[in-house]
Structure formats: structure tokens, C-alpha cells
Image 1: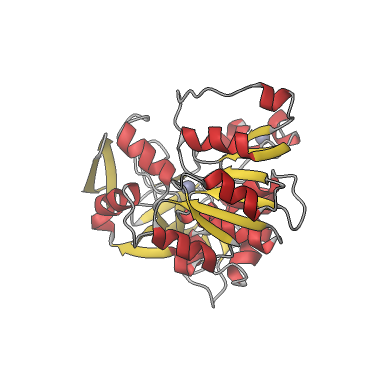
Image 2: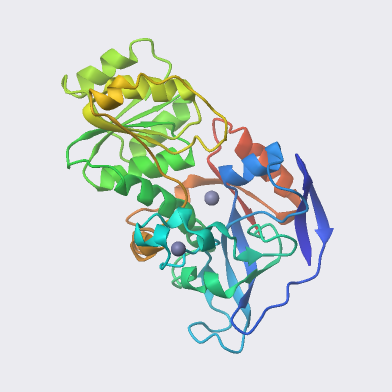
Amino acid sequence: MRAVVYRGANDLRVETVPVPHIGANEMLVRVAVCGVCPTDIKKIQHDTLAPPRIFGHETAGTIVKLGARVRAFRLGDRVALHHHVPCMDCHACRHRAFAQCPQYKRTGITAGFEPSGGGYAEYVRVMSFCLPGVVKIPAKNSFVEGALLEPVNTVLKGVNRLAVLPGDSVLVAGQGPIGLMFTKLLALRGLKVIATDLLDARLKLARHFGAAHSLRADAPDLPEQLRRRTRGRSLDAAIIAVPVDAAVEQALALVRGAGQVLLFAHTKRGSIAPVDLSCVCVDEKDLLGSYSADLTLQPAVARLVFSRQFDVRPLVTHTFPLAETAAAVALAAKPQPDSLKVVVAQ
Ligand SMILES: [Zn+2]
Ligand SMILES: [Zn+2]
């Protein structure tokens, strides 16, 4: 089969590799769509994991082979995959810290080499421990909608970390695909979203996704504008969906006492920023993080997306064939005014 193999920093090559073999408790899925995720871009550009690997983890496709002991699925089922699944039993899982579970940290979907998602290939093998994460896609829904369950799940998990009440004001800094997902899910919860970005096209879109206000992140009077739009109460929470340290510092200053700042894009190790620690201690502001998905949210995520209460389709602006995965990654890494979510489709 054809696959896009990572051979080193910024080196993706279309190669021919064997179709994966599956065991009795596993399945083989023909990939239809795989979303390009910022965490893959980071791994491809910064050479954080040893090559060779086949990346791509926002995967949807069709089951073409089933192990003899798999009962819950049939050949031909259209499915969305989940490459990380927690054991639900360890110390981390008992604390619902699923992304810290040792099993969760293993990737259970592969197209060959060290399991790394495999979505940038024609077929992927789904290992037994990842079967609980497989979701059937209803006939009326598209593979793209299936592929986007994973990022929506990560965003819903982040939203659930906030201690906010309906009507509260939440800043979402950055209106890329993830920021727009936050804007939409928070708006659906009855929160007043104030969206910021540097691209006017994205600010306009944010309004379509439910933002009450959208403001340029570089406006010199941004703090004043925020105070006015929260009627002097300032922000209840802020979500930082861009890897910009200055945005964290600014958000910590702008949220009210006992407000929350949630980091969602600071995934690069070694990024160090000064924080006035008294705003945590004296002002009781929380600095939180959220990473990756929560399997227990998957039914709620599937309902939101498949019912189109959250219609994710407008998020996808560019579709590339498998052979042009490198171009898809390059575009997702350097967004253009008209680009949002980029997917590879076969
Ligand atoms: Zn992802
Ligand atoms: Zn666990």
C-alpha cells in the first residue's frame, strides 16, 4: 500500500509499505479521511520522535478486515478511530487523568513502524486496546465529520475544566480550527465568548461560530475593550488556543479574581515564561492545562457532531490527496487567511 513515511525533520516521503497484519482482536480500516493536527506538525517539524514513522491520527474510514474475536463491528462499517484509549483502571484513570494513563500514552493505531497513528496511509491496523474508542459513523454523516470527533473531544475536555456559569464571559485567544471549536462549544453552553485573532477572516468566522464579540488580538486598547464588553466585571476565564506566551501573561492579568486561564496550545517542552505568582496565590486565579482527549466524553461528542448541533464541516477548507500530505502539513503549519482545518482524503 502507499503511505507517507516520516524520515526525519520536514522529510515526508510517499513510499510503498506492507498492508498491516491484524490479530484476532484487531481490525483493519481503509482510511478515507485523516485530519492534519498541530501535534503532528510539531513532531514532523521538530524531529521529537525517531523516524521512520507514519503519522496521522484524526482518522475515519471503512472496516475491511476483522479479527475472528471482534464481535461489535461488521465489515463495511464506516468508523471514526481513536488512537489513544485509557485503561480505566490505573491510578491516573481513577483520578480521571486519562491522558496521564500509561496505556493511553501508547498509540494503538498503526500503518507500520513504531505505532504513530498511521492515518497518512491507505490502511491502518487498530489494536485491541483501541477498539473501545471506535465509533460508527451514521449513514447520513461524512467521513470528515467522523475524523473531527477526536479534536472536538479534546476541546470538550478543555471546556469541562472550566468552573463557569451560563452568561459568564470567556476569552478565546486564537481562532484557528481549535479556537473556533472552543468558541462554538462555549457558545452552546450559554457562555459569552470574546474571540481574538490577528486574521480578520477568522474574526468574522468566530461570529458565525457563536462569539458575542471578536476583537483583534493586537489592538493596543484590548484590555479596555474587554472591560467594556464585560461591563467592568472582566473575564471569568480565558482559553489560550495559540502558542503565544504573551497571551498567557495578558490573560492572567485580565481574568477576574478566582478566574481561570486554560492553556491548550503550549505543547512545546521548554517554553518558560515569567508569571506573577501572587496572581495565583492572592488573586486565586487558576492556571490550568488540558491535553488530548477523554474517552468517556466520546458519546457526547458523537451526539454533538453527528446531530450537527455542532456542524464541523465548515471548518474544513482544504482537502489534499494522500500523495500531497507534505503540502497539507505545510499549509496547516502556515495558515493562510482562507485556510482552517486541512485534511488528507483518499
Ligand atoms: Zn490531534
Ligand atoms: Zn489507566
